[in-house]
Length: 77
Image 1 (tube, rainbow, N blue to C red):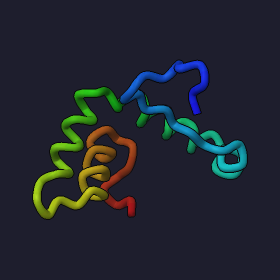
Image 2: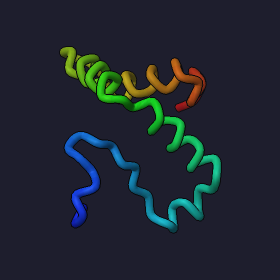
Image 3: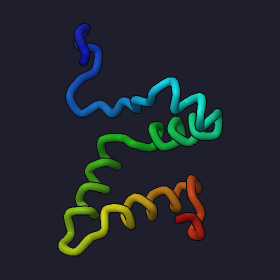
C-alpha cells in the first residue's frame, strides 16, 4: 500500500521482510541495491523487449543482464 502516494506508477521498490534481511545478511542487501540502481525505465523496457521475443527464457534474459553487470558470474545457477 502507498497511502501517501509517494511511489509513482512504474517505480520499482524492492520490498523485503526484516526476517529475510536478517537471514540473508549484508551481501544480499548490497546485491539488491546494486540491481535496483541499474533498473532505469530504459533498461526495463529493453529487458521486457528481450523477454517478449518468441521462445525467450525470462530467467536467461535476467541472468545475462546480471552477468553483464558483474552481479553474478556465468557459473552461477
